[in-house]
Length: 195
Length: 331
Length: 100
Image 1 (cartoon, rainbow over the protein chains, first blue to last red):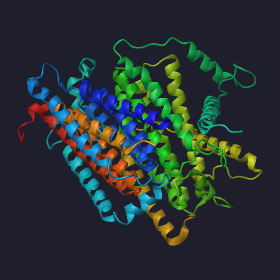
Image 2 (cartoon, rainbow over the protein chains, first blue to last red):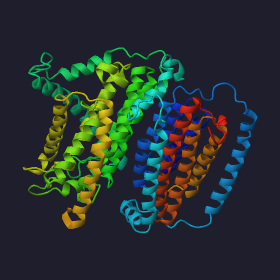
Image 3 (tube, rainbow over the protein chains, first blue to last red):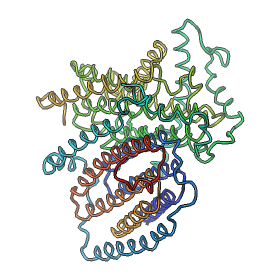
Image 4 (cartoon, chains in turn purple, blue, brown):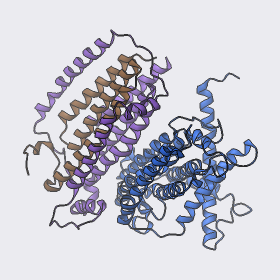
């Protein structure tokens, strides 16, 4: 009973944060709501006994992905996105019925089907070793491929983020220099353009 | 004595939290005294006899009765929540640290991973403070903090993984258990141990934003960094969180490299040994803080990406070879 | 014990919110965050399935999804920043051309 109440509370927070992310205009608040949502999902992993995944979720999402988002938001401060009326409002409103249809379909499919097979018992809570063994035996090839993918992504990002040849930005400067370079044109009215 | 587990956990957490707040309060006095001695001063002296031992209490009371100011253009919700969001992960890191065999809130089998994960959350509160203040210094500071924390998280994790690899477990009590015996501490492990400890200390300095890596609160450039606009209790919470995180990192360092609660004497001396070792690590960090000058932003990033990260990766690789060759202390 | 269908229902709701977010928002950053939302919903479903079978395969799969998501975010944000440097604007409606 306690567990169900806890689940409902966490699920409620997760859904509310997700809705707030999608419906609010402020990008920074959106990023913070995303953190809340990811934290709730981590808590649900804990309830499912996936303790390793919960920690990995926090490290990867809160520690890495969120930091990237926050950094991008700060670099893109001068961007005036989503201001003024939406020229394609009618088209976007179509998303509501379509989303409702998708939700209905998913629920029917997923909840209807899982009623059939009976659960064979919970996963052991001490399964970190099991995951590790699995990752380095059965899933060794995908694991190595993931590392290659990450390396490729890193090289690609370096290439994309590098300032172009012959631009005004100083060559060989660290990330902060390029960040400042792109933020400088709006420097005279920084607070006004923040929101 | 049939106490429900929820209640006993709550009591344990309550006691631990208060103990941490107490230790953190007095560790600030220790740091001030230590710094003063390094500079041939005496430090706080007048509040409380002898040697100003009431000074931290006086500071806390002063901060509590100060006016709480919220800047008019601030993003109120974010600004007000930031100190709490900053403080909670800093306190949560203590959850998995056992202070003696069986004396801790939760000795998880992924204890070290939990510590690293939770301390990664700290950046969220820092960013909220920097952004919510709507102050250009605070924002610049938050930006630098994000920059620096991306750069130093990885070396920190890699350095902390060396003892984990040698033990073959991420459970903190298991790591301490592997350091029994004469010269059993991992800092005394030939070559690898010392290098890992040094890397850990450097990365810890950067992760705690201390001099020489304190660009995000460089007084001469950014006044006080992301907490420029904070006053009163909120400022106190941020300071508390920062020192609690330092203390947590010191405890982790003492546990990973200095054998945790192991030491001569009866078993009940264990927590005291552990505390002394943690304070020792803290004093090393303080010593560095008061001896070096601040280095530039690009130098900080260059040190991390070009020196510390490759070095720790090689170190981890070497540790892997050592363990594969039978040098580990696995279970 | 919480029934598995609860997790799946929550996963479906979060996934739908993510998809709707991708469709209705103009800011590429928010669209990215919505994609993360949908990915997380899928992860939650995977872990819930894994709990039913009692095997750690579902969790291993989630681990890979996280790694791929990290790579995706890094590349995507770099592209957004690169586009922003050229355009000084951020709206997916204006990015319909496949060149600049």
